[in-house]
Amino acid sequence: MKTESLNGISKFFRYTLLAVATLYVAVYLILVFFRIQYPFELEWMEGGSVHQVIRILSGQKLYVSPSLEFVPFLYTPLYFYISAFISRIIGAGFIPLRLVSFISSLGCFFIIFLFVKRETKSNFFGILAASLFSATFRRSGAFFDIARVDSLFLFFLLTALYLIKFKDSSKSYVLAGVFISLSFLTKQTALFMAIPITLYCILSNWRRSIFFIVTVGIIVGASTLILDYLSDGWYRYYVLELPAQHSVNPRMYARFWVADIIKPLPIVFAASIFCIVAQFLKSNKKNWLFYSVITVGVLGLSWMARLNRGGFPNALFPTYAMISILFGLAAHTAFQFIQIAPKGKQKLIETSIYLICIVQFSMLFYNPLHQIPTQDDLEAGRELVNTMQRIKGDVFVPCHGYLPAFAGKNRYADESAIAELVGIFGGGPKKEAKKIMNELMQAIREKRFSAIIIDVPADSWLKWLRKWVEKYYIKQRPAFYDKTVFWPVTGRKVRPQVIYVPKTNDTD
Image (cartoon, rainbow, N blue to C red; front, side, top):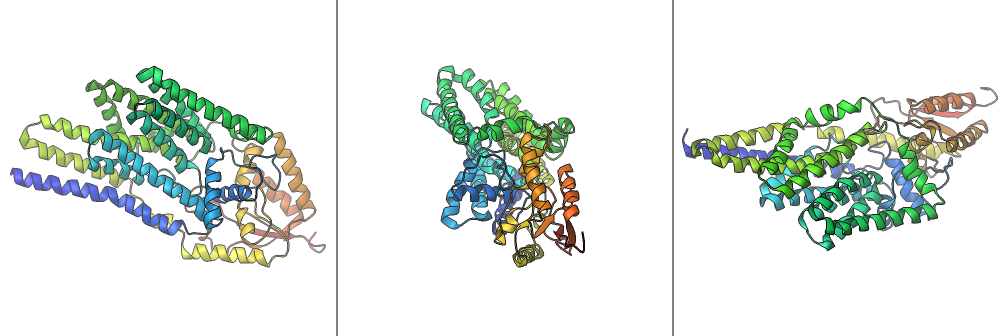
């Protein structure tokens, strides 16, 4: 085949790859436009996140003794305080929290791009890496833009890694320590990443590593002591003690590697290994040390989180981000290696590499329409809120406590937070759970709620709750008559199912 024809074919597939890759970014941006304004949960714990922020806005403490009125999530508080700040400007609700996550996700794309651009001096490979991470949107749970802590946590983590890798000065190590600490204050599992980062710092420049270690030690240590003191010990209980009691899901020992990484990302996984080996063969000791140590660290972090019985694919954020960087570097390295091939075959090999990359991106295809709530979902949610508004008195919705608040009612502790105390995720029932259960039993026995709306129970404590409710309340009607509406588009598939009202003398 003529050289001109091969050049044309190679160029065509290069631009095709670029178009396919950036299409994922464009689709994500379009999805955010429709999702960010949806006034109900996209994922079953979003309402609980809003509850945390509203509590901050009301001037109340976040980490307190658990009660029927409020149980905090097991996360460090920075995401909620930043979201509260935004809420003061644009108003409370889901939008400010999702806005923080969306901007953070764009920051993650940008840091991944900068990583590869800095290493390769190529915008093309930087865009390829950032686009690959955006393509993992569905595989990592479609969490990039929702009211959860993950995107902000990852942005701070990636920023710390970038500073350590490319800004070789005492000041940059201090800044990296600040950002890894901010990541910890967003999601405490970030502290796990301080171990491989510290190891890299010591091995690459042990004198300078002191600046990183001391910074992390001061910020994490001081913030933990202060927050624990201000909360009378409850900060330590929720952030450190309860998560440590989570049990292991044994299925995830192998499933993490097979279902989460190798099956959806076989080419990226192979490229990541190739990249690290290539760094070693190039005798670039510092690069090899950084990417091997940090990759092992993020794999360990994600694996540890997926082994958690309450783990979800959002735990894959750090791993997908890191192997996206390695993918961009590996593609660039592959193009360098083919320069030693005969000139007549170089363009043919280039075309093959582009095709392989296109295949990998195609394997991550998802239907974006499934990630957008429908108009029927919106109308069903509004009708349920209107139904609660017509009920005189309090309405208890344990799995979706934000809904009564939307109807102007009192809100109560979220089911997902109570489940931690009950021991659904391991460690058995906590003594604090008994207090809440007694409060709840008394409220139901006294028929304090004018209505109770519960999901079809899957967890043991919700099954117990339904049995207890049915002793004093009677089924009035389904929350929705349409079986297809108001399901969250990601995460646990739960929705309000049955409306119970107090039994009267005639129905006792």
